[in-house]
Length: 147
View 1 (spheres, rainbow, N blue to C red):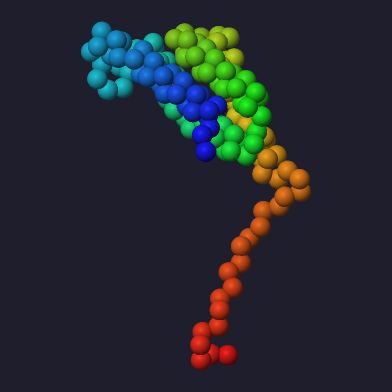
View 2: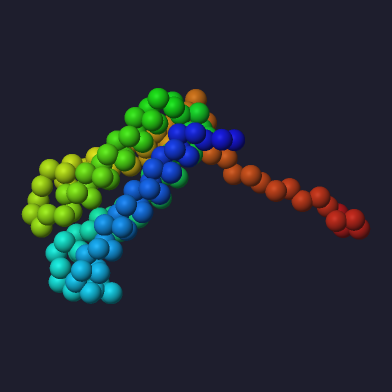
């Protein structure tokens, strides 16, 4: 089954991850920093922005795919996808500053809220219409010659 919303948001996430990586390289080259951040606050912030993205994107994308497979509303998934992309871009720009700022805080809060909403949505789909998880029991056939 093709998951158009998830595939599109996953493609956007791949582009964002590349963009986050490419933002790090010029600073590394300029300051000749091959490992770590060498105390450079801009490099540290950009590294954390990418690390933050890598921490959250897999969970978000897995939830997107499962909700889309479970029949979740494509319209709301598109809205959630746009929120995720915008939140991550805002957060990355906010991480360039060493003080608290609206893009950083807003991006983080939006990502957390989105993850919580997607988790709730996934649970609602899993347990809708009174469905309960069932444990499959395996019954074994009697072995010939044994009673």
